[in-house]
Image 1 (spheres, rainbow, N blue to C red):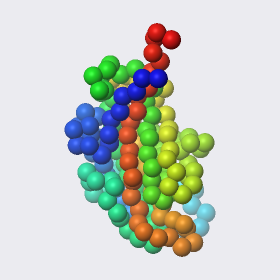
Image 2 (cartoon, rainbow, N blue to C red):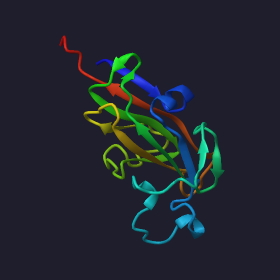
Image 3 (cartoon, one colour):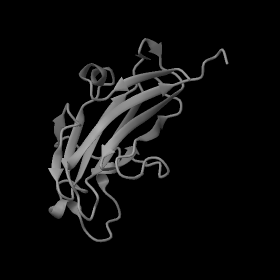
Amino acid sequence: MPRAIIDLQNSADLKSVNGVWRFAQGLVPGEPNEGLVARIAGSPARLADFDDSGWETTDDIAEWRSDGLSFIWYRINITIPETVGGQAVQGRCLIETCIDDYGEIWIDGECDRQAGAVQGFNVPQRVVVSSDPKPGDQHTIALLAINGPLAAPGGAVFVRYATLAFEWRDPRY
């Protein structure tokens, strides 16, 4: 299956999708105790219309951030370009990532609970952004990174990689 990739950690590729990474610490950034309360119904940071304009920006999502039990949201708004790797956009668009240590992927405020929820310790994840991407389409991608193991977290939180993959059928087959 033919593929074309946009590296969401490469400045030229980010420019091609008009993307800027923003990040903030906490399950609910800006809330007391980072929004960690019993029986929380959900973090508004997952929603597409959440205002992250006050968050810090970064061009290095692989940088280690915060140790101990911590939650960090990474958000990016993307615009599907006309071409990727010299190919016209077609097929489907996926985000492929590996979040250290646990991660969730939210696309336009929704989480594919089979592929976008926590899969295990440092497990790569692939989630469909659009099954029929069109140039100019806009999407909000929100990644929740959680340090683990939860009972004794080590290291820090970061995103090992994040790419947009475009895949399509070869018409000859």
